[in-house]
Image (cartoon, rainbow over all chains, first blue to last red; front, side, top):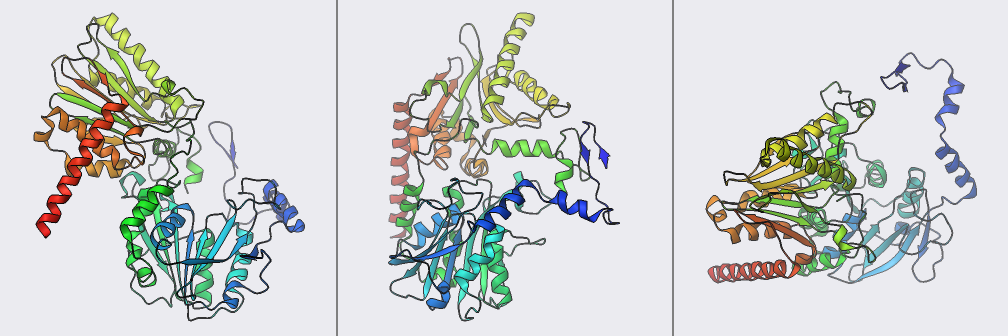
Length: 288
Length: 256
């Protein structure tokens, strides 16, 4: 233990191991952990995959029910806006189902009656080529729910003849570099792929220490374990809310093999993107 | 491990970072974008306006403010702060008091550099005192000095200040700065109108809904400061769009 100048006590890490193991365990469980345990008992942290029309749960996992050759997943608002404007405007996409979940990050306290705008992952497939799947995930999937999500979407024995592309964005402070964040050319794209992914990559690979987090990391790990070719395109940006410059930073991905056939009308896409920017969003008064 | 060295402002990390100051710089990026341009005979300040709530009085959400103007309105010092609104208000008040105090003491109005240095010193003090946090604001300060030379200065939360020919702060500042680097030429800036257009074009790169979300102010040598009305900004924006269209037509003619 060390006391700082202000009198706060900072626990110094010790490699010799802790003296009292039991006390350590108790102290490590925060009120948040206890709440999560309570919710697990109440089963309110379940991830449910629902069919589109009937809104009944799917009995098997999504990719066991439908055959898939290409799976494109957008996680986070900027990636979702990119797919909506650049990929989903050309070709007809049909909704096949959605994943409904609730966790402490959701804005409502009610786990049962969620409105469609919150905590939803929507799955689509291309009408002209039903083996091409797309997932728009704009909700946060908590750590304990990621495994459930993977099970419900990929299943326990996924077919290896599909290719997975994941798009997401992170704050630039997550990018490990010795340079100051002010000198980085944000937003910029980096990629991380599984061993079986052999196609050319549209941007440079994420440099060491190449650490990614949350659902994209879970999907990539799953694909690596099951030897599915998968690639994650990660956009580092200094603006976390929906921002056209960040969305446009994903453009190099349009030349990748997985997205090439799906993109047609680029000028129309820019128009769609402008519409998506909610200009009547009232911004907080804290920042001028 | 940043987490062990970022709680106290007065603690350096082993690799020489002052994390609280760096985090304050992140706070600036949460604000809107501001652009400052120094022409030969004019200084221009443009800011992105945020949409206000329906019941909020728009007049109380001004971003560009005067720090001082001389009795005969011969020149003024204008500035805009980007970052935490409350911090900006506090610093502006201190700066205004300092401007008057300087005038009363030495009977001369402040130079732009003097007041910038005052603001920067104030900010630096807050990075070195215990119990306080740095100001989460960057500022663009423009004006003309007694010698008639236009000035543009920029300060940041660490308390550094520099003179610039053109600069941008706030959200997407890097994109705007690159645009300015490509399009700023000394010759063009000899024309006042070109300087105004450059500021608006730079803001339009990042402002989503065009002219109605831009606030613009200029000072011309030996003239009082002028805040542009929404109509005047719209006029400039239409002119810029016309020029863009004509440039694109020329381009397509060349390729055909």
